[in-house]
Amino acid sequence: MDTRVWLWRSLCFHRRMHLALAGGAALATGVLAAALLTGDALNRNLQRLAQTRLAGIRSAIELRDRFVDAGIADRLAQKTRSIVAPVLRLPGTLLVVDSDGAEMHVDGVNVYGVDARFFALNKEESSGSVILNPAAESARISRRVADALGPAIQETGASLRFAKPSAFPINMPLGDRHDTRTVRRPIRIQGVQPDSALGRFSLMTDQVPPMNAFVGRDWLSAAAETGHRVNLLLSDAEPAALTAALATCLDPADTGLAITRGVNGVWMVESSRIFIEDAWLRALSDPAVSAGTNTCAPVLALHHLVDAFAADAGGSIRETPYGFISALSPATDARLGVVRPEMANDEIIINAWLAEKLHVGAGDRLTLRWRRFQWAVDAGRVRLSCDARAFDGRGGARTLPASEVPRFDGCGSLQRLGHWPADGDGETE
Image (cartoon, rainbow, N blue to C red; front, side, top):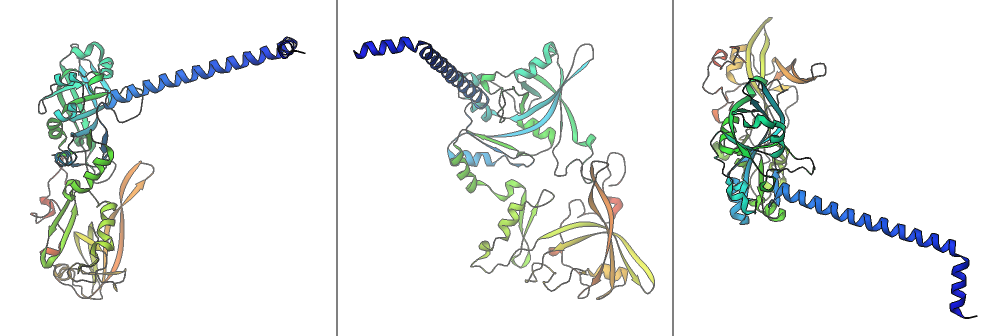
């Protein structure tokens, strides 16, 4: 039988099976083609959204709840030969009062304090028409904020409300009260920032347009009392280049560390925050830092306010209110601290003034009362709980020189507790 005849008869005899196979193959081909086209369209759409959000931005240093001196942007720009824009970002609320006196709130607004370098990151020519006075009370808003305001955008009675950053969280006992941290400043809405000119800027990979308000960084820094500090750095340099430049340009002072030289070759490292960051502690405590030198391991110090010192002197309790206690890590070098490795946990060293005031000496029992931080589940915040502990005097009392006494802001020039400044309610904190 001829091969062609055999193939034809076979196709005719099994036509139902062949038709089903051909139909399935065609359907699968159509599904795959549609998926490829959809994926390609989605990929192009995501690329377009990313390009709209970031424009010419290739790298970002986001500090979140920390701040760095804005001057580092100039050093990074010189090192990488690129644009590095310092930005102060704060969450806020935009408020607009219409002609009838009704107030409209737009919550969840990202308030960006920027300068000309931020808009220079947009490589399109249209960005050159953006003029924002860094010190004036004016703002440019994103399209989504404008849509939320609606006709109210034409009103002139607009203001921004935001919280001033603080080293103390608001739920901490030492934190500022909410009404003292929240500020409201009047602004003039200068216009709507186009999406193509960084109006849709966001570091979040979200397809929902962000709610942005762009103001002058100098104006926002003055209103938020952040000084010359920022919490966001944007650049058109590649991430690897910016990371390498950051390793050489970052100075301890940029992060709030103050390094001062004391007597006898001793250096003191202090932080503008509550505590020194763990990364700095690890770096300072690294044995490789002092390897091959005559330097000793650093002494770590934690200072706390004490409510009272009390001692039993001959059957009568003597007590003096308020003072400071310093917990030091043991030091083998007397220049670095008075705590020695052989000192027990229930021993304490006091100065000569306190020893004379309480009539105590070496070996006498001394009781300290202070307040410790404790999380209150019912209140949902941290409270100060009373605590006390007894210590044995060690090694006799002596007067500490001024170089060994830690500096406490607000206490250096005061002689009495009543001289401390009062808060807005007239009560001494």
